[in-house]
Length: 360
Image (cartoon, rainbow, N blue to C red; front, side, top):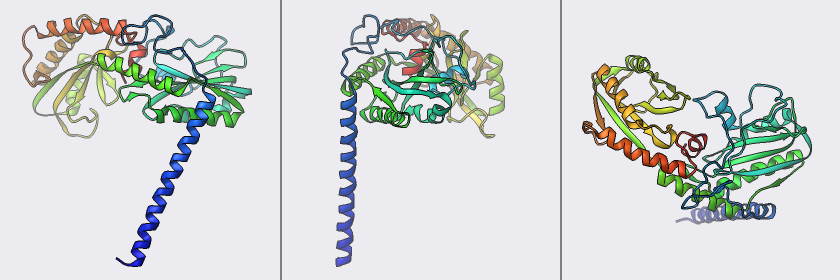
């Protein structure tokens, strides 16, 4: 090995050490700032305003009443923090609020009121940290609560509500650090102070919520085997005739309030309108925490699945690839009633806005 090669290797090692050292120093600086600004708190967001069930699960009824979300539109904009296409809010307070059972809030208090038009360009950066969504709330200079920022109003403060856990896992230290950094950036841009709970308490609350959700997370599936590939357009037409509606790349069988009872997806994972290829397999999925409680939750999906199978000349089988046994839907529905009750007791009613948020 030549002296040049040895020198290049040594230089590369030195650069790696410098990068690692810089990252360590930067992480330590952020953590110090977080600990400096975060006041300690003894309030547990998982307990909310009521008593907790076993395992420190969120209390039922802890959240304020809200509209149940539909399958898109205004509700989706509100959950993401994206501003509605209007310039000013009404004189009444918005009803949607942070949910202390599953979200943690960082307060941003402006020294002087700030125009919504000046805040709007930064809303996009406040939608997610890592795999956790954030919601933005604000208080106007007239002390009106807003669930989104309007260009034609001025604001005295903002609140960043960060989700404590979802199906990606509990809120991590990195995600929480990112949320705090976003709040700090807003504070520096608009001359504000920030307040929030202690980092360790936040991470522990997220871990408890994640444990609760993991114990209750259940999905039940069925498969339709079409035998030979059938045109996607024909399959889509049959499904729509039965009552399925579009839900992203999938189709959904909606309840009366618009929430999906169960979904239908292509076996290859593609959207139903993607390309011209045929479909050989379909999946029906009942996502129990995200579906409204129903005494025949599984039985209803079986009925629709059998009807769909008959129209498509397909075989309906369970998740083990076996034909459904007679009476199996009754047995499964009885078990699901127990799970619906457990979700209710944990403060995560099936199909509720809170359940849809943490089981996403």
